[in-house]
Image (tube, rainbow, N blue to C red; front, side):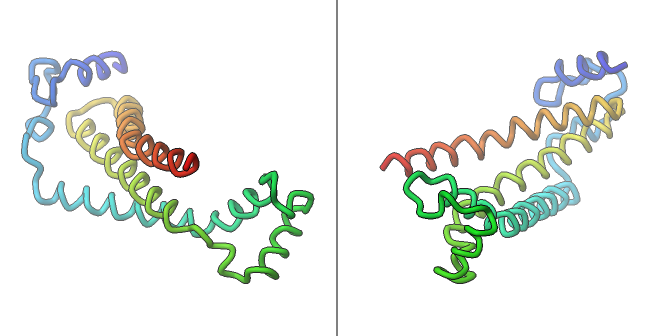
Length: 165
């Protein structure tokens, strides 16, 4: 059943080849997204973006500490994590813990939004086509991972170009 589900998905060109699977529902083949489907995509994009931004806000202080400890020219290289954290708070205050948070927040918001929305959209389409649940989850994960590359590759390229200059 799992192989048949993969074959079904792989043989559909742009979700239109109804002969690839006998049990494909017309909802799966509809070329126009319904307004409720578009609303769900917007909700998933929003939820993913908020989740990504929350992760950056929580994790950024530790990233700052890690960067300072690892930097070869840093005076904090010999400090422990807590010692480095204390030094940053003494020298720069609490705002020092979130210095430079803008670019990663922006990038992660787009990335997580894309991952959430592409996963849910793919999974819902495959589920409505009666594809095996495990196969649908696997394919949705593959699609969301591929879709995230359209965000991560350009943002990583910009980051590397920024470091070089």
